[in-house]
Amino acid sequence: MAGMLYLVPTPIGNLSDISIRCRETLEKADFIAAEDTRVSSKLLNHLGIKKSLISYFEHNKAQKGDVIVQRILAGETCVLVSDAGSPAISDPGEDLVKQCVAAGITVSAIPGPCALVTALSISGQATGRFCFEGFLSTAKKSRKEHLESLINEQRTMIFYEAPHKLLKTLEDMAAVFGGDRPISLCRELTKLYEEVIRTTLQGAVELYNNQPPKGEYVLVVAGAEPEKEVTATAEDAAKHVAQLMEQGFSRKDAVKQVAAELNLPKNVVYDASLEN
Ligand code: SAM
Image (cartoon, rainbow, N blue to C red; front, side):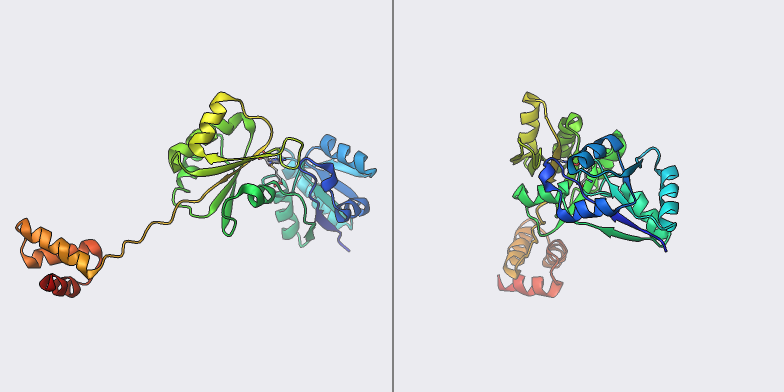
């Protein structure tokens, strides 16, 4: 009988955030696939768990994915962990899950630490509707295209970013979304120097022009304001028609133009213009 793949989230800064169920799942695994075996060995040592580790990361995932799938199909249970947080979210685990699903393997996730959810919940931004945008590309063109595709996004937007790229990202966001767009910079979550900086994109650019960013960041950016629907009344339309007629338009032409501009039926505008 085939084994299973478990996704086990690991602490994003505070080792006490490992849950009892995560610990038990690690203990019962036949082997653990880890993004960085050195990082995961430290956690396993801390938990007093000894297990065989196999590395699974961006540059060996094609080859190691096949090995892991074969071992699971042969009956072993694998636990996938990333360096920190929930596996398969902005890390290569996504591909292992796809591969296992395609091979008919049962995949189960234990809930736990996840940087984006932790950040969103304390951001002070709207949480009802949000979209996770992961890391922006380092390539200038695709980065710009990514941000431009979000110009009219009304949901709260969440981004991951490395500190050395933060200032450039904030500058690009300010250029595309406008400097007055609110942002919450959630840094060093669950760690000693956890901090949420609630400001605007321009405010954040000024801040980091004066001090270099330090630590890990999740950026929670407010969505675009909904466009205000213009609801013109018949009275507005009549005034507009009168103005055009004063400029020399015939009533018929003025009505036609105003009806089109205000998206009102021509007969409504015409009747209103006669009553004005
Ligand atoms: N899979 C992980 C998750 O979703 O929890 C995230 C992996 S991703 C490779 C790493 C990014 O998560 C970092 O660059 C940073 O943006 C964010 N991150 C991780 N730990 C964090 C922390 N303690 N505080 C703030 N951001 C963190």
